[in-house]
Image (cartoon, rainbow, N blue to C red):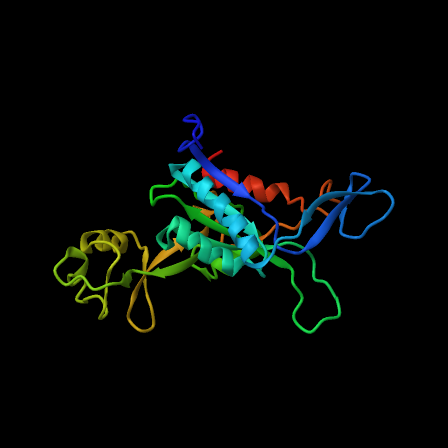
Length: 266
């Protein structure tokens, strides 16, 4: 932390700490991860911390990592659902609740049929925080499938173009501003304001990009062929399963790391 080349200059952190499982992780023949012992297995690491001891172990490291982060930096902490809520409280304290960005659900495996009282566990979580509100962010998108297009753009116009509509007003009343003014004989609904100025609404209407709902509300048309090249916005549930034959215990899907790097612009 005293190295000026590092302290305050790290712009992205991803950590996959122990999950407080109280298990011994072994590697067999350098290929598979296991927690069962055999003559050929070697101990990879021992995850024997739990409770307050584990949280204190993690707290010290998170404080250090925060000091290492640059002002536009961010951190991803990969943890399981048993400890995730404790770790979130810890990160709220260290990074500030206002710098919490996402609780990402990661689908880690196929459904299991273990006999137990309770639902099967196929997920873990990634907690995403920034150091300040001015963090680096490149919005990730993924290619739309044909099923996506049909689902997201269910309407078809007279020319055969698929489209959907979105409201032209948003929550928040602005009585004295431009977006609170009357347009086309209508004020925005109570407690809401126009998303754009009345002048811009006129331009949309002239371009044929406004559709009126059955209840008399204007909605903007969005055509599939205009957004296909951009892809669809990635949400906070990631189906990026662990490798079936990991080369070391707790190895993660490389695409998971690539996605995080791409969000950061790496």
